[in-house]
Length: 89
Image 1 (cartoon, helix red, strand yellow):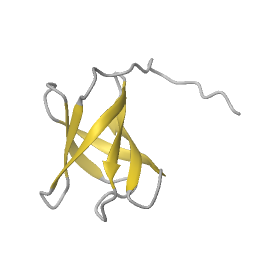
Image 2: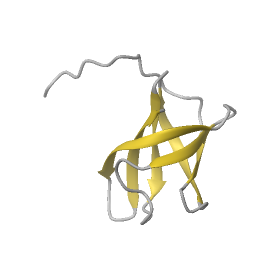
Image 3: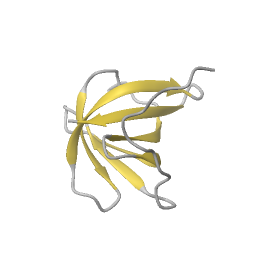
Image 4: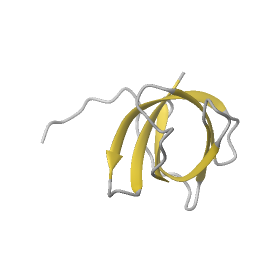
């Protein structure tokens, strides 16, 4: 296993923190936050055809103000559930 040097410390969000993601087509997709940091976050979502790498979306994490983020990675946990990593712009 390779150690990844991260720029920002990751922390566990408050229990049941939701991520509301707005796609470029205006669709809202809701997921559960798994990690947060100063530069991004990660969450679990139901699989959706609009969730693809390197697109910019609008994210609102919990009670924080909405901001733009890029989908940087996607891990398919099974055919219907994906974990996504976002980097804030």
